[in-house]
Image (tube, rainbow, N blue to C red; front, side, top):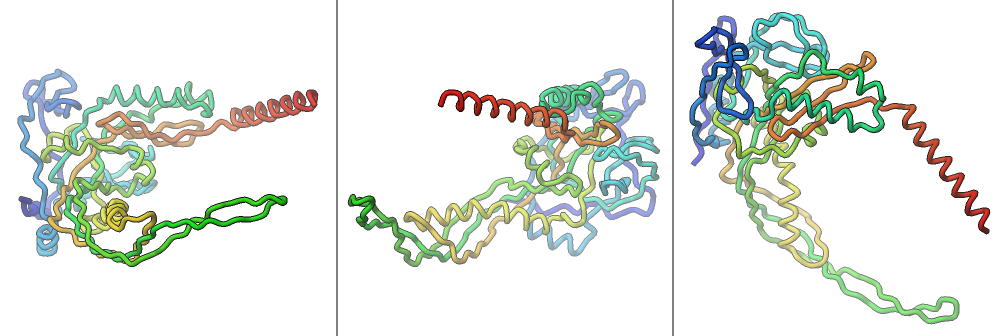
Length: 373
């Protein structure tokens, strides 16, 4: 049974602050240790166990929409806005000047209070910073057509950043009524004269008939990333996410990391439209299977989304930018699986050399063929 969506506390009039977890031994700020359930002090290495976690609760979609219309759906958190790429991210503790984790642009700004949806689930970091940097190095070495100097000069800008990006998942049992056409193939035999000889051949035809019916398809954890900063191709490349590893949200998992704020344009309702689009191919496949025959046409469909629930969660990525010849290239690592997505320059000399080699090989083959005629 899905729970009703919780209503976060209303915005306060005072300055927004991020929760801090001080070390009991030395007073430094504890940080979440990827791959564990502990907070660790980066100085004295003292550990603090976060504790056991219950199962993440799916929230009722329609109840949440009703509540969000009647109450303030967000709390206030301190974020800074990057004028270069448009990202809104939380700031490092006590930082005044730092680099944007998405584009490496320098940001010198005072924090401002920003309305932000409080998630109910989090997928904690599993891949450590050192492993993410190693993945970056290996990725660079494998780029055949990257400039040779890149492997010597390419570097992570300042440091790689642990960042949570916002997302939604949707569960629903769909029922779709459809109309369409079933195509059954049949064949006719024909003859023709070619060069004085009679040839027999067959022609395939389709006999179409009306079809209608109802299909049901159940969906679990249909993911829609709610970041306005990363492009869709990058997000697709970082998939899949092991969403069964989600835990109920706790501030401790964000200790030592930053988080991108949910954009207003990618809220619960708007992102459900993207989820519908993601479900459509599977629904269409069920319709075609139900129609049967050799070919199918879908003329109309009407889908009901029953038992609709959702989670609003945070996904972990290591993100940074490296500079090469005064140009910035973005680098991402899925902090659960280690999957790498990176941008790189191309070496015009290497590409030209490959083309030249191809031309030489083609010329040599042509000469050999001509000599053997």
